[in-house]
Length: 99
Image (tube, rainbow, N blue to C red):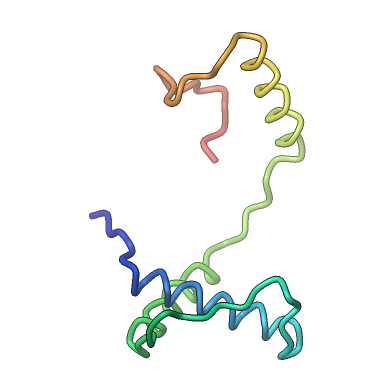
């Protein structure tokens, strides 16, 4: 099942990330983010966002491969020499990571 965010969900996510950003800066906004909701964001939606973020926080943090940046640049350069890369590959290359 794929669930898409509606505008109220998006407002709750934006507000939650603004709160996280403000808390990370010792309660001060650093000027990069000030979110003003067009309407009130319900506590129910904020709680749902918090549950998802908490679940994501519990997931193991896997370090990316050390050569990921080099492989990404090499692949971009390879695609640039061929021309415009297609929007979706015709097949999945089993030698490439699926990250």
